[in-house]
Length: 158
Image (cartoon, rainbow, N blue to C red; front, side):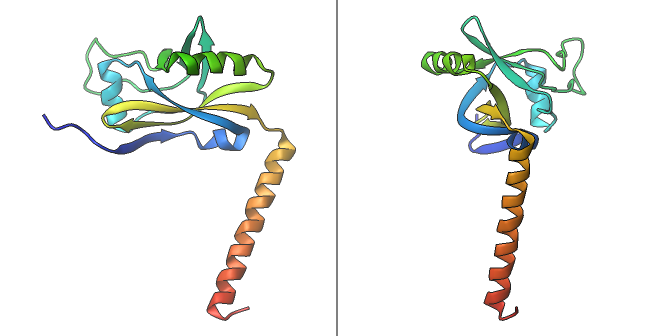
């Protein structure tokens, strides 16, 4: 049997980088059932309302929507069930300490296949205020303006 190699992104949470300042990232495996994996291979998932919690020394992914598999039967999964994340013990202990600090949360940034296994990129993040978001937008616009000016200057235009 041929082993699957490489990195294939299933879904990304683009809003997370807008709403949160990412302090640290972790890669975690996910405990799934068969029909969930088949649905993910079809590229169907949503991280819109997703977050992670640490309960009793285990990390749980909550609010991820993986739709039911179309060709599934009565063995189909529940779309919004809680899924356990697989991390090393020292990473879990570090997350427990960090999440007890005020204002820090665990947010999934992306879900992907890595060598045939489903992984989640989990971020330890702090929520941004509205003025932080405005500063980021202004900085991005300024960078875009400067890049255009440099491009025009390189072509000999003003």
